[in-house]
Length: 69
Length: 317
Image (cartoon, rainbow over all chains, first blue to last red; front, top):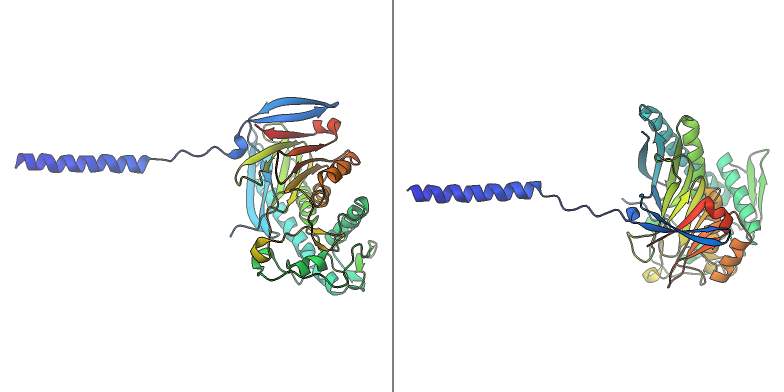
């Protein structure tokens, strides 16, 4: 009888662990595209200058899309 | 520490957003400012929309040949549109509406039905638009109808930005984005320029480039969206020379200018221009800069280098 209870408790413990893990799982958030490192092509007096930028964008321009429902 | 307070809503047939730079304790003023932006966009739509039969523009189009009293926003947008037509030697033309309707774009985009395209009988580019600013009225040449789709959202973005910062003058800066037609002014929360990502038309969700603006406007036009007709074979960019959807032109083009309406008008113009024509267009207009995205190959920055200090062109690595 004791073995039966041990098996039952073990199964419940396993289920509880799986439930906690499933509940606490958060899929990794994708990096926003605009946060990607970028290289600036800056024309000054006819010279091209490369600059690295990593800050995210404030807005995105594109051909105007139809409003999302 | 400065923050960005934002609001997003639907208007002018697209998704809109506005943002203001705020300090601590300025949340109430930020909300007032953002509400002012939304109200101004609604007011612009009430005057400029061709899909609202009660709008000032619809009344004007329905009464071509007669003087019609119109609101100040429509009057100003018509003046800007006529100026853009003169500046571009007719490559930008707000009177292409009959050709656009004949091509199939005859109602708000989400309501379009598939039907074969036709040509507008007797339509010609460059029809007269008369403005009587003193009496607040306008008159179209008989048989003419106007579409402000190539300039109206940029104008509304600038108006909304002005209204937003006038409603709360203490706020450091702001941004209004009407479906990709963007106006910016003042400081960002980090004190640098406003960073505007350019969407990659070939890879949805990816960023092609980032523009940095201290003040002014950005707009993108192209044939990667708003396609219609049989199997999406048509697009909304009418060539005034032919009266049909344009054949030449890039996939998309993004223009930065000192004003959002100006940026949109020139983006519309360059969207039906070959690369050589676009180069010449930018060379003659040193206040503009552009990112020309051909159907194949890398994007091509165009513009006057000394002014690039104000409008940096950033290519994603």
